[in-house]
Structure formats: structure tokens, C-alpha cells
Length: 418
Image (cartoon, rainbow, N blue to C red; front, side, top):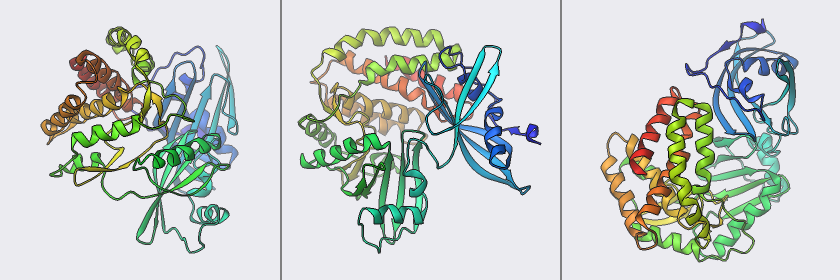
């Protein structure tokens, strides 16, 4: 019966030829069900269908794929579920169910787990259940009358992090779940930035040993939400510059260095060239352009930066920035990043907007002008191109329908920008 499993994938088959990760081709290919089926059957179910919904790939390092599956339990109707399969250069991640197979090229081994039992995020399984979350909160002495009435998964990146939105009556909170070994540093970032006057969320409760942090909700929409609704007022670029300067003025003590987006661009290009060989020549050309900017990036004096300062990370109220989100990577880095990241994301958003593209482009231009005295025009153009190459990986990572076409469109934008 298991052999009747249906693959509901996309028309474009991902071919990954990675000698260090031989199992990657099997996870990403149309026969991934052969890896998922033994785990489901060992638990007493029958895999009815599967579809890959996200893929995180770092050539020569690791690949993690999430699958939306349907499983028949005890002969019943197919039930929706989520499975994750991963391979790393060191083998299956610890804590996963290993699936091993012999192939003509040798033995391969993949680790599989079921949502929400992520082996690297021990707090996740409890946090997504009301009774489990209540238990976690009581363990750290939070008031007994905190009764979550709704738990919503906002984001999940397997073996790295998850974000949950918790509604408690009329109040809303967020739970950030990370690897326990990273929790103390994340807590330090929140405390450190608040002590420097940055508008980051207040930590209400946390358990670093378990790897979770409960945060207050900030009052106001994000810039992304304002752009999507085409609200009358977005953000004053002078205030945006002021926030970047306030970050740069923070004491870097205790904060690890942030890798530059310019340095990351060749890695993103390598991913795309591997999964989309038809774009290899264009990506190699972009890589040559960006390599010329690497020395300048390394030589710039580092300052504290956000590192991922796109339009979804700032909370706006009446044109003022009243909140700064997702500070997971704040630390000393190339200061140009906090300019090229928001501009790159805005350029992309303008390219896919059906209604207010000109207005978004104007905002991107104004942000560039606000920092024009700090960086050369050529450095900014190459930097924005580097960010867009990272953005170009998103359709593949999210396994969007016809993702190759979407990737090519972003690369067209890179070509116009560089």
C-alpha cells in the first residue's frame, strides 16, 4: 500500500549534485517519499502523499527539507501532517530518526522528524500546545492566570528557530524559540539594545536552558504592512538614518561579528547555480562583479548593525520608528549592510508590486540619498545587487510553484541594478 504514495511536487525537478552531501539528491528529488515512508510506517501509518514546501541548502554543508504530507492512521482517512528530512556533512542531525539506504554510489543516511518534535528546538513541542506552553510559563514563575487562548505559528526554520504568536484575552505576545545554546546571547541582545535606547521588544519571561523567550507585542504596523496597504504615511528617511546611527553607536562588547551580505552573495549564487544550472553563466558574471567589492567590505570599519534590516523589521507609528524586530544577528559588521538590505528588499518589492511600485521605488531612492554621503554610488549598487542575489534564493527555499521563473526574474533585477 505504501508504494501507492502520491508525489504532489512541482513540475520542475530539483537536481542537486553534491559529492559531500550525496543524500541531498534523494531528499530534493521526486522520490523523497522513499525516505519518509519508513518513518511513517514504523509509527503505524501509511504515507498517502507528500509535497516539499521549503528547502534550506548550503552546498557542501547541509540540506533541510520540509514536507506537507498526508498519512493514513489505522486505516482511516488521510490526515495532514508535517515531516522534515535533513542531511549534513557529518550525517543525520542528532535526535532524528535515521533512514539509511544503499545506493550504487554508496550508503546514504538521512535524519527525519515530525513537526513539532524538532531535535534542535526542545521547547517547540510544548510551546505549540496550550497545556505545554502554560507549563513552560509556570516553570519560570509567570502568573497562573496567563491562559493562552490562541497559538499561531508565525515562522519556522527547522533546526534553527520558530516564532509563535500568543493571544491571551485582548493581549498578544510572541514566543521566540531557538537552540538552547543560542538563547543566552539572544537575551543579552535584547537587554543590551534596550539599555542603549533601541525600541526592541521587552522580554517578559525566558528559559535559556530550554531555548525560549516570551516577548511583548510592539504597538504599530511594520513598514511592510504599511506598504502592502498603501497607507498614506510610511516612514521618514531621516528617522531611519537616525535608527541606523543609534545602532552603530551601541557598545559592541559581547556581540559576535555579523557576516556581511556582500560576503554571503557568492554562497547564495553557488546555491542557485547548483539547483538551476541554466543560470550558471549569469551567476558567475554577477559573482565576478561582487568579488571586486569584497575587499572594500572587509576594509570598512565595523559598527553594530542589525544585519537583516528589511521593511518587515521596523514598526512604524505616524512616520516614526517605534519598534525594531528580529535582532537575532545584531552585532559588529559592515555598516553598509543596514543600507543595502532595506534598499534591496524595497527594489524587489517594487518589482513585484501591482499598484504602488513607483512609490516604493521612491522610498528606496530616498533611503539611498539619506546615506549618499557615507558610501560611493558604485559600492551601494554592488551591495544592493548582493542582497538581491540572496533574495533570489527565496522562491527556491520556499519551493514556490515555478520557482525557476521567479528566480530568473529576480536575477533580471540584479542585472539592472549592478
